[in-house]
Image (cartoon, rainbow, N blue to C red; front, side, top):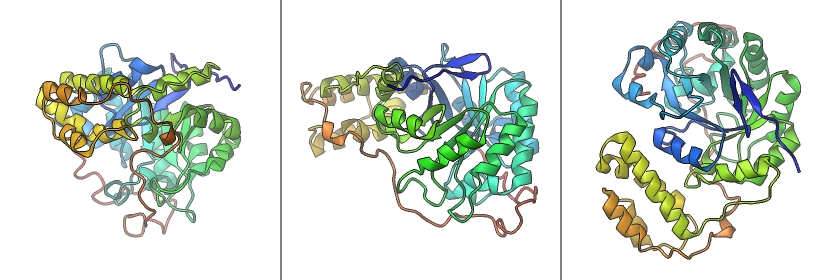
Length: 375
């Protein structure tokens, strides 16, 4: 049985070596607390744009809140301009906003890549180096990590060069989502790329992609030699995955297979936490609606009941609906190992005009820092 080695992140020890991936609209204070109640690890907030942070955009400032007992406080930043990155990191340090900064070079959504950000940015070697160096320098010893993809597409891979650059700049570790931007979330992750990255670096390498069960994490580490795992879609509607991971990394075969009654209790807890975070029942329960289908996947719950839950707007209403579920219904083992969340299809990556022409340009694309309010 594989036994993991804890990760060192500045003065913090990450044990087990499990990281919750930032997911827009998902990994807020409430969801992070719910996951932390299930098992240990590192829980990263939603992606924050550096321009919006520097300008103190109200929505962004609310997104960087952390629980009172949440340590380390992990903040993921996105940006395309080294100067703005530096200002944002200086702000984090001076105002003690976080204990750890993760840099996003993995986002593949068009609104990010069309400005040269996310998974498009490592193609520009000089710009990438300037951004990572600015962040590490401004962090003044606060640990900085990076997350990236294999590259833009199969013909424009960047992960090995970019990871070596990040290592030279002084980052604490590199996490690789083993897909290209063109793949988005489709197909299978190429774990061989994680193994290649592990061989290329001296700092820790974390693997991400197609970890649906704790056994997948163990298999990834055994096959690639990576030092830890990053969990994204696998925990949607399944916060107990972190309990499974803690058990697996401790050498235990115990796995959580909650009954429908136990899942219903977690659903209500999630909605409660969202209500506390957002301030009103209507806002909290409304935000919870998108989680209903993930929690109930595979369980016997009629379409009408699911529909009503996805339209509920108060904790009392949600509680009454949850009470109509069969609490004794066993966990549907047939869904184990199945993908969760978005999958989609591959597609052409939207890039700034001429983006692929010159790899060594460090010019920030025109308009890249516009419309970055909102986190």
